[in-house]
Length: 443
Image (cartoon, rainbow, N blue to C red; front, side, top):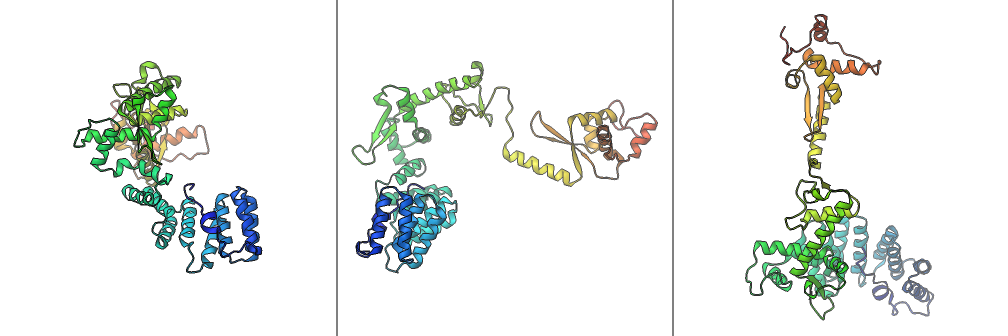
């Protein structure tokens, strides 16, 4: 994670009281610091390694090497040096919070959130206001789905370090989650989206704020600036003017202009992708929902479809295309197929089903009801067919598999065709299993 500060120079290495510059170790550390400051991490690592050879338990050298390894994305190396530093730290060391926090960063980069959270908590046990650990813990909490708790952690971090850009950016992104009704109403007033004297937030107001906020987070202001040589002054407003964290937001005029502009651009992109103009406004997302609103702007899912189209990926359905099954449904189909195979069924093709119907003269209903055919629908046009291959003791239910194997044996003579006395007896009489109406013959 690039949002964590490495206190290699400020917090770790400026230890002139401990390492006098005139000592060999002090001179070695000074050399490493200069190289690190000059972004020459290869030489800095070599220098700090030499320092460690002078004193293999020196905490400053171990922490410095850990910091260099982080810069070089050598996570395992950094972890080893930080752990070694912990083993050699005196109880009075001021670097416990820093070291545990860096170990948290490493675990987080490795995708080990549980370990990272433990390290951040350990860091905070030494210094409850350690910003790096507060932010790291908030990131994990947010990933776990507790966005409100994450927002409180970002607020705490900003109370300690108001200009922390990572915490501020992430807190802004969570505004729709943690804003009170009063804060949301005020935010809409700042965007000129409601009247100044409005007292209560309505459901439609809340929905509007979420949409405007989402448009801002997706880069809507930059999008407009690219479209307009000079952006109209009433399209944006600036919050927190004359502070270190001034922020530009969309006004309602800007938001409406953005929606219209994106809709127009999307039409061109879909046409370029081969969609006929008469079909554009009937396009749907992969769940079957229309992506254009009556005013020619895009829905939220439409915006996703549009961004996918910009990348050359088709995430829309044409007017006559069927809605594809969901992954959850496909998983259920796969499980059902496994169950069928475990119960002695085999899948046959549509052509093989036609062979069975021709040889038996049975209707689909009769095949399903009396001859063991199982039809598994996936979509309106896609179906899978299964017949019983195991010996059921019923010549009727084993008849379809008999005909399928006999058909397959024409192309592969080595296949074994099972016996079916019922079919063989009927064939002697030049009869099929069903009558002309598709029902079973009775003996």
